Image (cartoon, rainbow, N blue to C red; front, side, top):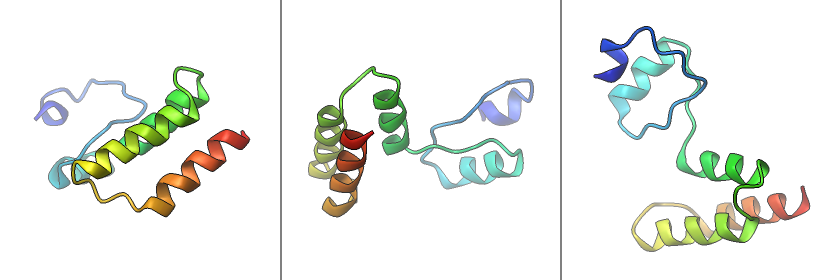
Length: 82
């Protein structure tokens, strides 16, 4: 609803989970970033560390988000190396 009512929004990216909102966002050419991507960006900006990214993704997994362990470990390893 915010996307439809606020065409003037100048957003760089948008965190979304709803499929209908993702469709509208894609149609408008706004990049979509998931939760893992937001955590990665926060780490790259020095706001959190690689271990905190890993812990947050593992907590999401414990709560039912379908992040594969290999996905979580790959993100963690890449962030540690960068």
